[in-house]
Image 1 (tube, rainbow, N blue to C red):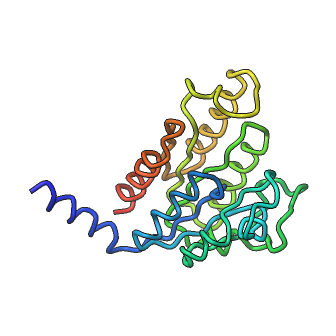
Image 2: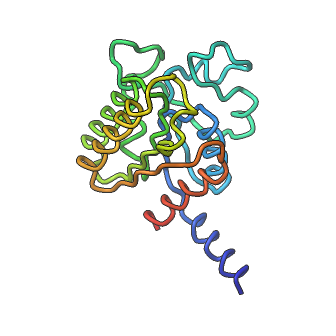
Length: 207
């Protein structure tokens, strides 16, 4: 009976194709999540600061995210889209103009996977929220960050309170400005479990 219930639940999720946008989706979590979502039949667009480098056959630099030609060939329905990353003074993509209308306007959910603990994280969060409010105010916003007790595992090596403050500022922006949202704190190094938790929010909130 439990097996039948699980199969029915999965079928109900895949019967409707959602349009999912992943910001900062060229890391390990983005790779796993985008693959899982398209395998479930959904449309996935990954916002990245340089789509050309993200799709290169081999990684060119550690400065930008990378998925690779082989991965994208196996998942042809994953779309890469240049965006400004929230910093209009440091644009590196070649075709970033109009990313809001191309992606956010038709999205059912936006998953913010932008990492790091520099000001860039706050700028990217603010940009996603502001542009979503303009073109698609009711879109489901999912903010993803690490647990407080695991912050020391992540670069840069700065005091934990500074990292906590930056994360909290990003989450407060989401809570104060988004009508439909979820703020997740995921356990480090458990990518499969993290993907499951993100997908559960998407499916539960969009069903």
